[in-house]
Image (cartoon, rainbow, N blue to C red; front, top):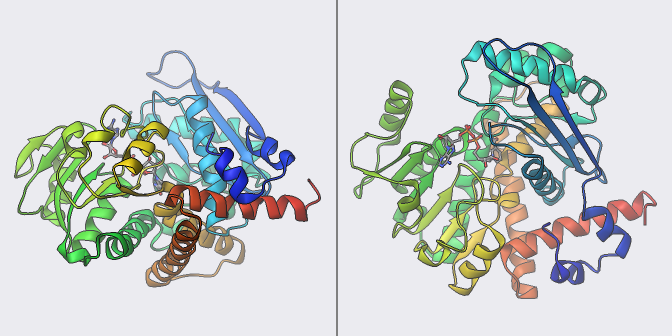
Length: 397
Ligand code: NAD
């Protein structure tokens, strides 16, 4: 659970609100019952609504991974409650998970997604839960959900031809780059063009983060994916890396020298962006992190113990619910436009993300300075305050 005594005190949180936020509102666990060629046994699906105070809808992505658990989905749903509130979006926090290998052939993934949408049809058709891409899913999977509901606002992160938002696929990485630039200026007192960067993960979030940061002039010296990484002290050409990764299915073997995911995290760089899976910075390796600034592109890449070690070592961590909120900010636009049918240009999406994220950054920064707490605690307290205010306004407390 993200809340602790310090947050409760900072917020002046009533006991009932604390109780409501300390466990999920609702949990759905089901199995895809239809036959899936080539798959033995059942594929489990989890949907967790953490807090519906600012919803419905509950908003949060669909994670497809063979290791995904109900606990992990619940943790991610909790993060979504605070992320949505910090961005001041009228969404509750939710998340879903499909316990299947995301590297299965596209036709098999399609059948799995049809099964997922079928099992969750009541949640999707009622608009209670509005999914988006997360680890292991993308526009193609969102298109399958739309194909089952035929309701544009039932899912975001869709391909553009069926109501997707221009700029949505780049949105999270764009937001991470905007926040990184501002944080580098604030905490490292440097321009983004003067810093070295290591990025873990080269999927949706990692690859777009690399692209935008490199366009801003930052020197990306290391990038990795699930198979390992590549390091080049003179900087990596991201366009070339994208091409290489598309052709070879991995960044490994591209230029420079090969590096493990573990070593990438411990490189002597200015900025570290974990943008793959959760719990990669733990109490075991937190003491070895050399980057002065860590911007969480992934959700929950730093464990609670590790966070304390990093704080003690004077490392600055920009938390997930601030750093990677560009995706959900764009999703809000896509959701609204699904209802109205109006169109947007990519540049408008980027402008909205920049404005919303930087405003949240300034609020978080000021509150953290005023109260002498970390950025994570500050962002959490601001978001929790908004949730509690909404609970009060709804007569729940
Ligand atoms: P993705 O599936 O597109 O890419 C994941 C990347 O991580 C791939 O390069 C993959 O090879 C790599 N990877 C997988 N397992 C790994 C491991 N054990 N070690 C190192 N690398 C590994 O996923 P994504 O959408 O880019 O999501 C990445 C992270 O960002 C997740 O934590 C997700 O929750 C978070 N996030 C995503 C979005 C979004 O809009 N897609 C929004 C907010 C947060």
